[in-house]
Length: 282
Image 1: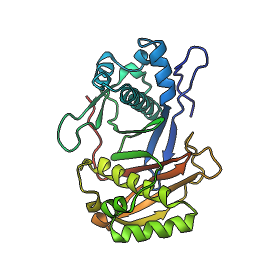
Image 2 (image 1 turned 120 degrees about the horizontal axis):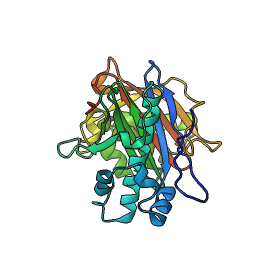
Image 3 (image 1 turned 45 degrees about the horizontal axis):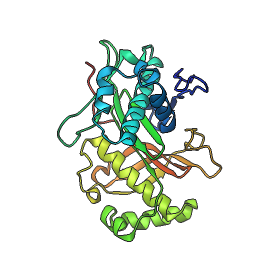
Image 4 (image 1 turned 90 degrees about the horizontal axis):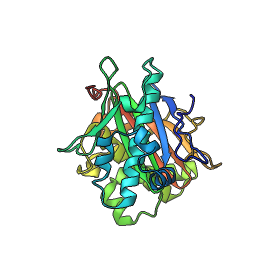
């Protein structure tokens, strides 16, 4: 897929490259990763420049509600990622659009407060969007069938109290075994487990106020995906990328499919639920 021509810096330039992935079962999802450094430099140099060609005045105004500059940059980067993921995903389906043809709002109340909602032109298939950001990266994922949830976390030490609060005894045993099997560190596995739970509550709409031990699973089945390239996460020689079928305690018959990754000091989980309807176009 061709990169989106989004120049963040007049001198050096930067391309946002969408990555289309077909999950086991045939569902297509599209990822876009945006470095916060590019957005930060573009905003400092030209607040009304290239960013204003991607985001509407209303979308820029929403970002202004973040008093902390770094949070505002993360919000902007996430919305930019979502717009280009939507453009790439819908363009591949024969619906060529530009950034300002689309709108992004968000749920304002309830367990899904803050969840992005795509506003699309009439006749364009509805899409579901999920956004995450951590440290130096923002990432968005889009699908036009079902629901998606994504979470990106910086790998960090996780204390025993954290493990006991977030994971069931069965999950702790499984992650310890999986870490030994894959040659990954405990910090990587606990961070990845946290990502899986956050991605799932986003996907289902339960919201992050849900008790994460109530969102339990017995493990995953690997279904390939080692050749998926999701820069910059998968650029290192020790990168770990897999398609998975996540075996959920609440959904023993079906479970959900998705992608997990470790690399460059990050953990990533993206999950897709075919049972849920996508967001409605407006």
